[in-house]
Length: 165
Image 1: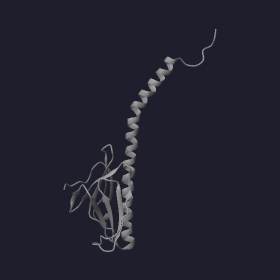
Image 2: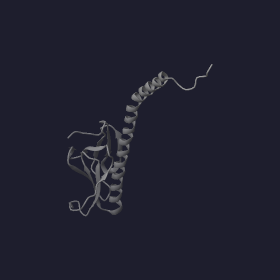
Image 3: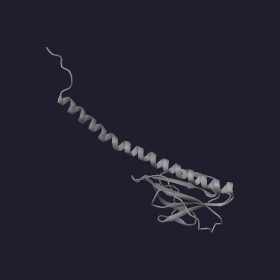
Image 4: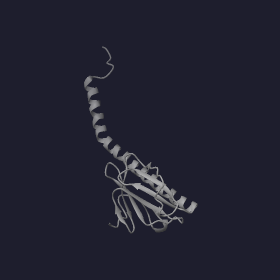
C-alpha cells in the first residue's frame, strides 16, 4: 500500500476559510490599534512643538507664536519682534498625515474651529490657558493643553478642558 503525502483539496480549502475568518475579525482591530498610536504620536509631536516654542521664548527673551492651521495637521513656530509683528514668513510642519487639528479653545477667546489660530508665549514662557483638540480619521480625539503661566501641560485622550465658546 502507498503512503499518502500532501494534503487534499478539501483540507486546503478549509485552512483558507479559517485563516480568512481569523484575519477578517483581527484586521479591523489591528487597524484601530495602529490608528490610536498615530493619534497619540501626533499629540506628543504637537506637545513637543509647544514646549519648544515656550523654551525658545524664555531662552531668547522674546515673544513666540505657534500657528495652527485648523482642519489640517499643519503647525508653525515663529519668533515675533514685537507682539504686534505679523510680517514674517512661516514654514509649516505637519504633525501627522491622518490626524488633523480640529479646534483650539483659548481663555478669553473661546472655541476657534476654522482658519488659522495661534498661541503666544511671552518672554517669561507664559501663555493663556488653551486646549488644542486633535482628531483622527476614525473620529477619536486627543487634547493637548496648558494651564496659565505654563505650569501644567496636559495630554489626554478625548476632548477635555473645554469650557464653552
